[in-house]
Image (cartoon, rainbow, N blue to C red; front, top):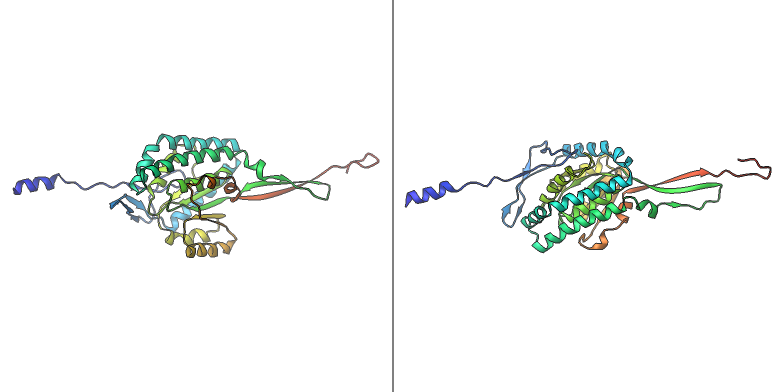
Length: 302
C-alpha cells in the first residue's frame, strides 16, 4: 500500500507556468525590476507576468518617440496595409486568442465575439487611414486674399490604459485609431487579464509593424500612472475603465505639461464605439495660410 502511494506521488509534477514578457521596440524584454505577478482566473494561475517599473515606462516611451516621425511619414495607404496585415495575422491565430480569453474567465461565446470583432475593427480602421483627412480637414473661408487650409497631424506619443473588462477588444479599439493617423503608443495591458495583450504583441511582431510603433507593458496602474502622466515626452493619454479617483489624479499630473487626456467609459462590444472620431481625438489641427495672387487693373500681379 505504501509503495502504491509513493508511486503516485512520484508521478505528480509541478506545472511549468509560462513567463509572459513585455513588448518594447519590437523586442520581448523582461522587466528591468525582475518582478512578476501571477494573475488568477477560474481558481488557477494564468502564468508569470512582468510587473513593469518606472524605467520600463521610460524605455517604452523612448522607443515610441524614436519610431514616431518615421511612422508618421509613411503614406496613409501603407499604414492601412499594415493594419490590415495585423487583422490577417490575428485571424490566423483566432483559436489561440479564444482559448486564452476563456482561460481568463470570459465565456466561450463572448470570447468568440471579442476575437471576431477585434479583427473587424482593425480592418475598419485600416479603411479609414486614407479617408479621415478628407472628412475632418477643411478649406476655411477668410476675408483676406489667402487660401486657408486646416489639416490633421498626429499628436505624437500616446500612452493608453487598456480596458479591464474587455481585454482584447478594448486593447485593439484603443491601439488601432491611435496608430492609424501616424501616432505611436505605449499600452498598459489589463492587469487581471493580460494574456491577450502579450499574445497580441506576438501578432504585431509578425505583421510588418515597425519596432516602437506599439509597445505593450504589463503591471499595476497604481504603480505607473504618475510616471506616464508626468512624462514630458508623452503627448496624450487614453484611459478606459479606471475609477474617478485615478482619472482625477491622471488629469492633475497631466496638466503640469498640458498633456491631452481622453477618458473613455465605453462598452467596446457596441459597434458604434468604432468611429473615426477616435482617430481625431489624437490629432492636432494644423492651419496653413497661403496668399492668393491678384491681378490689378494695370495687369500687374501682387
